[in-house]
Image (cartoon, rainbow, N blue to C red; front, top):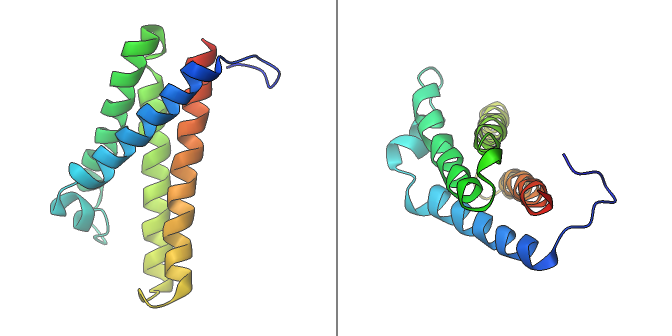
Length: 131
């Protein structure tokens, strides 16, 4: 893990941030099926659809890591774990609050979820760019 004062090549970092943004777009919106999106919110059988969804994110991160720094392949597992925790947390808060789509707090929850994913991607990009 790089220290806070580690110099990171700006060009490499920018390309990695873009790669993670594309990965997120593809995994969250193009490849996520109804089974994943609806199933991860199910009260009892949520684990398989959630892991299928977050597995897409892990796979995308694996592809990025293997392209840039193969020794850091394990960052895919980190992304998988963090994404799983963030998405499960969002579902649990959503189930507890039952916020309607018309409530601003519903959108805050979506925004916090997306913010946490982007912060994760920034961290992964820093680690890869500094390696």
